[in-house]
Length: 421
Image (cartoon, rainbow, N blue to C red; front, side, top):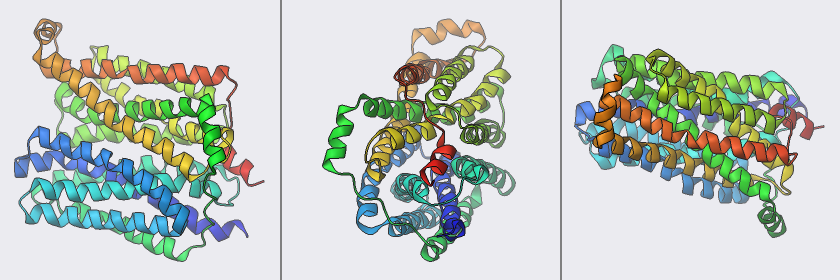
C-alpha cells in the first residue's frame, strides 16, 4: 500500500478531532445564552457541564467494544452520527421547548458521547495508519483539536456578538457540516484493520507494571490541569479585567487552545525525550497556576492562563506515546483506559476548585483578604486556581518518577514513523 492510500483516513482523523472540539467547546460558550434567554440557574448550568463530561466515561468504555467487534470504520461512523444527531437536537430542541433543562442536557450530552467515542478510537487508528514520517502532517494531527477549539470559540463568540443571543440555535446547525463531511470521508476512504483485542495475559502484565498506574494518574492530573484553567479563563477575563464576554472568550479559552496547539506542534516535531519534556512542562504549568492565583497585575494573570495551554500540551501525547511503547499488547483498550482517566480528571478538577472557591467567597477569609484590592469573587477564583495547582505539582512528581525509571521515549511524530519502518 502506498502512503496516498490512507491519506483520506488521516484527513478524516483530523476532522474527527474537530468534531470533538465542537462538542467540548460549543456548549460552554452557549451557557451565558441559556442563562440570559431561558433563566437557567448557575447550578443547572454546572449540571450540564458535569453531565457532559460524565457521559464521556461510559462512551470511552463502549468505544472499545464497538471498535473490537465492528472495526475502525464502523466505530468512527457511529461516533460521527451521534455527534451529528446531538448538534441537530441542540439547535432545535431547546428553542422549541423554551430552554427546557432536559432538552439542553440530552442534546449536549449526545454531542459529548460522540466526542467520547471519537477520542478513544482516533488515536489507535492514527497509530495504525501506514503513513510516512512527514512531521508536518503528524504534528497537525496532534494539534488539530486545539485549532478547531480556537475556531469554534472564536466563531461562536463573534457570531453571538454580531447577531445577538436570539439566533444562537443557528450555531450548532452550522457546525453539523463537520460530522456530515466526516461521515462521507469514513464511508469512502481505505481503512486499516482494527488491532487484535488485548489478551488476558497482556492485561495482567499491565497490572504488574508500575508504569501503568503512573500513566493513569498522569492522565487524570493532566485532564484536571487542562480543563480547570481553560474553564476558568473566560470568567477570569470578565470578572478580573471587566471585559465583555466575547472578548473574554477569545482572550481566555481561545488563547489557551491556541497556545496548546502551538505547544503540540513544537513538541510533536521535536522528537525530544517524553519524560524530560513532561517534567519541564509540569514545572511550567505549576508556575502558570501560581501566577494566575497570586500575581496582582491582572493582565499578567490572564497571560499566564494562556501560557498554561502551552505547558499542558505535552502531557496527553506523551502519555499515549509511552503507553504504546512500554506496555505489551497496547491497543484500543489501553488508549481507552487512559482516556477514561483523563475524563475523570476533567470532571474532578473543576469541581474541586469550584468547591474551594465557594468556601473562600462565603467564609471569613474572603472578607479579610478583600483589603488586598481583590473583589470577593475574584479572590475566590484565585483561591480555587491556587488549590488547582496541586494537579501540575503531582504531574511534576510523576514525570520525575518516569524520568528516573528511564522511561524516556520519542515523541508521537517519531513514534509513528518508527512503527512503520
